[in-house]
Image (spheres, one colour):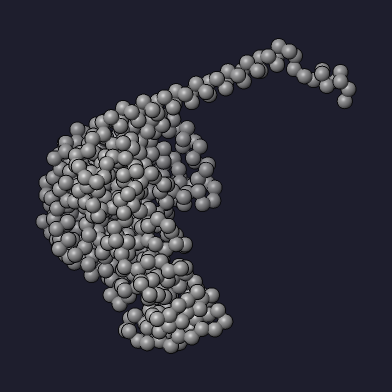
Length: 539
């Protein structure tokens, strides 16, 4: 191409100058907006942080360096199985649509995923959408009665609630700890709180349900934990929550921040929970959160906090107006149609401080450095859902497998039950799962409680069953997650020592060869046989 031709295709000098000016203006605008955002972030954090105050004195102070010195208590590392209870006003109607998961709804019905989800505990929000299955159910059964009316029915049912029976059932199931919903997102407090809710002053139990359950649980020798919905409270936010943007970025003001701090302090002071289990996020900045956690550790030195404490920020306040949430949802909606993206929300992101992680309805297949806990319901809902049938509930072997895999990979298993109504009946189909896990633990608990991960977490048998390993001192435990019969042949592992079947303490012949370990005539077709290997070694 000639020089003249090349030059003829270049923009005129004035046009080039105009392009440079526009581009330069955009760069300046981005820089200015960035500086404004940084300044806003610092100002917001400073204003929020100066409201931080501690109510205790002790070894822990309101800074990250101090909190990270808190050791993971041995009792929590040793306790591999816990029971969570979702129980509240939503237990009265006990309804949500079934047939799909929340993650799938994000792919297929993003614009109304929050009012179509399978969580019966979200009834108060779902009924606000007149086109939702929950709203249809409510109209047919309760007419135009407001959600708050369920408080009367719930309170009446409490005459038949027996916390000691619950505690005995959880003990029989082999649980080492219990975590109960003190306040869910519907905003109803399950104890006679002295902290006034400015939008619903009397929206709490007159009876001390948390205190009664704490006493019953601890009488059985179990630890007592409390769930608190810090990130969402629909009494402070009356708008219907439809999308992930709504759920994550609805605006909460200083009245709510003060309210949750005071309520959680009240729970700590009154009940001294062994586990402080916050959900969704936390409405203050980090300084106020660290003050709260330091107060908790000073009050309950061997207590633990979960990882769902993502703090508020200037950025989250910027995202709260509807146009910003619309922009967020516009970006997220197509993203969730990509493979495996929706599944990622089941595992909370890292936060600066926590004692353990909480993946939901999912687990890890390798040994984790940080202790974790799989949280899941027996069915698709955490709260009681009358629409669920036997087919919607996980089978007992699946739950036992989750427990064993958690223990093998430096974790624990928290299984949720959703009692019905104020009477708190654990429905037979859910109770049978607790009974099934408890039956397995009665003969195999030695391979779970107090154990730690081995040098590797898993292998398979030649028949295709998964096998997981745990260890305690010099003892190795081999847990076969299947129904083997006759010889149990382990792939890719050579073990030596004395083998014993835990169920009945029967000695089992152990041989190795060709990189395999053979437990001779060790299994009789029952699910989940466990073998102890002593005085040996393996690789």
